[in-house]
Length: 277
Image (cartoon, rainbow, N blue to C red):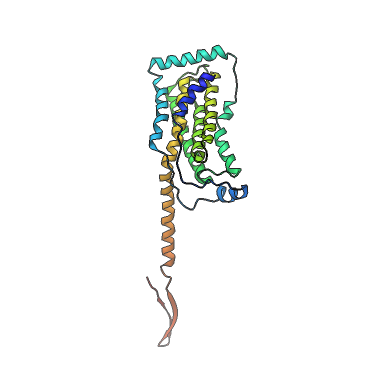
């Protein structure tokens, strides 16, 4: 298990990077957090940063998994890992990874409730998480059914990629994005939990090594992609609201110097209206 943990950690370390963003990371009490962060939408559009070059390592991890279908040495390494697992831990069984996969996301919101703010408000953070999960869910579901790979335990043909691992690494990158600027230890903790999830999936004979590597890459890539495209989506939505608000303001102020007064001329009563346009 130690060897597997180190191997997957090495792959994951290639994708870990410090995200430099100018944000408010001051510690606030729980009351302020709930009032200003959980319930209040941001007043301005923040510039979220995710270096496009950081997409290369997780893409390489996905490519490694994909090559296992065509490159025999990579596939043989899958069988070698499965043989080592069967030799060292023949009776291993655990369901802990079903909980580990969600731990990084839970920690992010737990820290926020405790008053430790990350890079984004609750609304932006939740939108980013939802976008990441949508990207991951669609791609993982389609890939599993398209590749039709048999699991090591023979349960079904939905082995590639590892969904648990992908979810865990999506959450790990999410936590790193939100808290790496505060301390890199948050990212280390998140990626350690995600790596443990991948190791457990192999020891439970649910996935091959290449499934886990590809799942890790897919999870990381989904979050990084969300952080890249979300600013454009956010700006587009906000820009539309701003234009509508400006239009309403102009409409309201169009007749701000208008004057309506009664008039009487040759025995006839009337009204006169004047306005500055």
